[in-house]
Image (cartoon, rainbow, N blue to C red; front, side, top):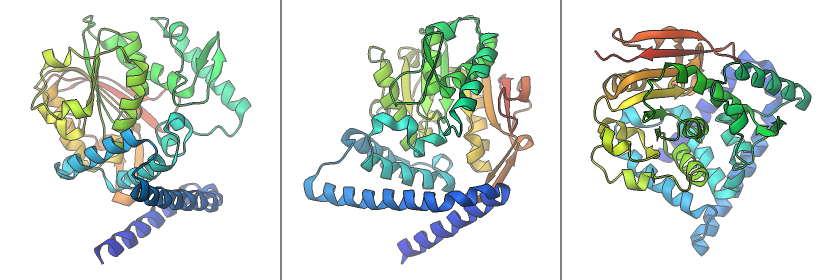
Length: 364
């Protein structure tokens, strides 16, 4: 009975979510039959894959599924402040089904990961023009000449366009845009420790590690995204020292000296409190605070205040509606500490619906 009630509640919330999105954009109603068919096929494929696993003990992406189960088990024991909102519970249900049925080597073009990556271009000609304009915008700020030295990795099979002999993608340009929103305000110390909460598959971490090789990058995320980031960055930087979640879960604390010994550190949200105070130089959140409850957001802002001694970068929507959790968050709702110094708050480079803010975290 409990499972039935949970299923009925999930269906009700899904219809509520669709109603809100269709009310905002009526054109989406034409996509419902296609989405319904896609989800139905995915669900049936998932059930068949689970049956196959029961009979043979074999699955697709065995290592990643094992990691997902370990993380999910640990998450159930964590404080509710670090657990996914209803919005994200639905996404991770989708992710588990994708993991059981799809080739993870093409994750950048799978519909689930489109939520973290580039949307499908409706017109290739228009999209190429957009990429060219965005490339030129970043070129004006490219003080480290990264457009010449960095290109979109082939891992994940994302869509790319060649400019000046380099494979360029929307995700790469967006990451460079965000990097240069932060980089001019960093200290001259190159042994910096950067922490990104809600890093998706690690696109911004890739750019930071290429641009500042002596730095350390901590990725903090929920199970589905964390295992993809681990998969992605461990293959792109195989010779770099890294701490995977299966290693970090053995630690009771993370001080600055220990963190600086590694290039990539993978943490779950409930491990953030184990970082010693004022160990982080940069804290980053891009488009994920807006998908949390206000209690969770307030908790993370307090953590930033304690753990960071440098700058905090945030990019969110001016207004974000989350029908599943019955939450509407506006720019003014984010609990920025009075002790922080605002460096800037401005519209994002390309999305008129988004803003970015940079703050000097001086502590309460």
